[in-house]
Length: 250
Image 1 (cartoon, rainbow, N blue to C red):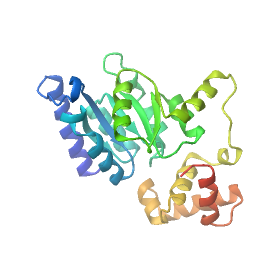
Image 2: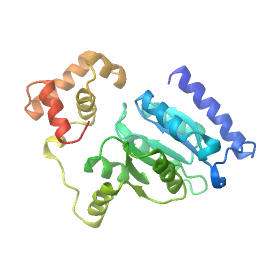
Image 3: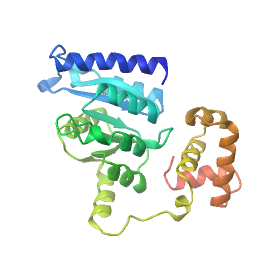
Image 4: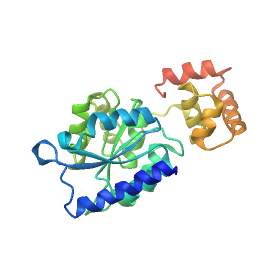
């Protein structure tokens, strides 16, 4: 974890103590208040969400921490114990599902549960179903308005399940049937790490940027890209990008 993230987590932990002892007011209209952690690998997106929903006196949403990858997310969530985590699905280090797995005990805490709301650019069925099976309380896409996102956060805090309209159907279909959800056989050939590299390549990242994001060497990135191209029978990264975009994996 970077010094800035560690400092952010420490400060947020102090705010959490203050909130528990009644020293923080910060309730928005109607006296509502919710403590939130933002988890997304794009710093500018986190900044935008914080600016949109984190005006505590107005919205009642207090952003107590941020994280850009799985390890940072687990550390900040554990330190701050927010009521709600806004969680991106595609993260360096294993993705949103890995965060959910490592925070399962916090989610299961009967007295102070940490609830998760997926907030992602992806509306792919496998992503939605994956994080819901992992324990998230809902899934909304990044096209959501600020007002609707604030409302969704409070609904999740209260224990409701929240979905963007189109995505609810994926979940109903998956859980209403005893059959497993449809599997993309091509995508299923890839390992979790290869999928992470695939998505970053499709987003336009250079090999060096991918290596930095995933904490691996450039040579390892090249090996993963070669494996992905071979398994999908593609010739270059441009074909790979088109393939990923057609499946809404970007």
